[in-house]
Length: 164
Image 1 (cartoon, rainbow, N blue to C red):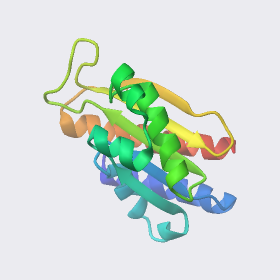
Image 2 (image 1 turned 90 degrees about the vertical axis):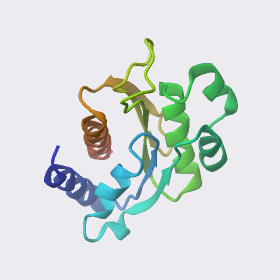
Image 3 (image 1 turned 120 degrees about the horizontal axis):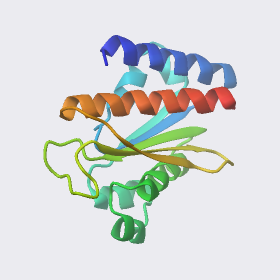
């Protein structure tokens, strides 16, 4: 991914959000704020970006986003259940109409047989609609995994805003 590609996706997202009068929020773990950075690189994003939460630690996921301790204990930080709770927490904590979350193992360490390096869970939450979560596996080094996660997050937002 190039910065230009992420910028183009973020600009497209901004145009779609503006046309609907919606605002977006982010909840990020392994990407460390890269989705929010891509979004806020677009001039005028203050009109459609509401808030970004970087919740690397489980204690912060609980404190800032209200991720239940039981979800983290039962499913782990890298899970669709945690991603779902993060996205829903970002909606609750902000004035956003749609939120995306990302949690994963970007490496180079930290992987397990069940959740190898490159495992990433994303979720998209919209007000008054069921939250959607997916588990993906991305190849490459830490940078490539994080970049692929940003693209997946932005593409998922675009898809859901288009569907309205």
